Image (cartoon, rainbow, N blue to C red; front, top):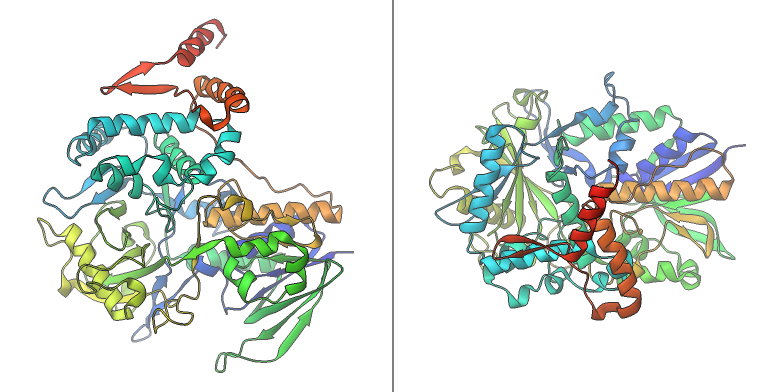
Length: 584
């Protein structure tokens, strides 16, 4: 007889749980989602109504970004059929080829390839980018040498050091930013973290920030890897809607507009859920109850700790009580609809000087099958999608002196537009006011600000020392409740779609084990530490010295620089001799 599983939440995590369970068979899966659509923060929505029978213009919470080191979510996407494509929805991911760093000065943008250089033009762009980064940003040579040594230390550190030491240091502290130049702080400390899901250098753990940075650098240094991938159309069209159709084909029941408000339990075992059917007009409706063999909470951290009543479970389960120590922050998107398309670069633009930590992408160049003339009023030619990561720093232009949290929706739009123009319009009028047709701010931002619940879906952010407060997918104290959300301990360790999918896989595997299922477990893959044999030896040596000396001795850097020139340390020399003696 099939075991029943109730999944609370129909975002990326909840859909992943439902999909992976249904693919394996032997389970009756019911998903409760409070919204009328699936996808959670990843969903797209109707933003600007269509005119004359046209479709609405699409809007999103921010652009979708699939780095090359993602493995869990892409694997699930290969099992979502789409128009006969060999790898299903996964084939809707396309690679961007450039990344731009836009600045508020005369020598405006730095543009480099977003992949390992292959062609002569790629190498030319890479060398130009490297030359500008090292010579025109005001980063002193000793600061550059120091940063290379930091990267080497990260790659040479043993796992015990990463979790016992680096986890409790912020990236700011680890990078030594306080003792370095303003340029170093701007580009190597703040600049490398501000676009990582609302992370801040002074808060993010060095373990997470450093190792995600290494993943990105590894992808950039690997031939054939697509470092920066985006979807080739609006998210719901090319991913979420086909996903919903597939899980329903697999007999998953999804009950939209059903909000779970309480988890009942007895003797450390969940006995059922209670909730309410949401009435569109009154935000309230009839009550419902349901029971199952297993339960999966696939809702964001702020929902499970504040909006779902389960006091008895929290008293008996320290992992649930510890969720109060986790931090959420605002990170939301705004979209500008343009009469004439402005492609910028073929990829993401990072506005390094922007007060509100902006990042953007021009969407139309990646949406080849989207007919813009059939949307809105038929006169929109392009979409500039912008992520706003910093809602607590005062604006500099339209919102001068006010943080984004204190602004009206109109003030947010005008400040973001002004910050974009300041970075892009140094020598040419790239963005023109007359070319702006409309804008759409994430509807989760609800005025008045900053009182009551204005951001309906904030984002979990990584902070130093937060790892012990993050629970595992299975709870030792509760035998039939499992957690599947981006706050669960995962290899990814960031609030991302990849982290949510990995957490879902861990929850599914725990259910398979608890139920005695013989189905094959979901694949779960660790991040790969870059480097070859030299770094493997270095990490082994560091593990030995960490057991003896602890934090008093730092890892031996495998690569160091002296006045810009590489110097080989003893560890590397030993490894190079071994490599000559070992067969290929």
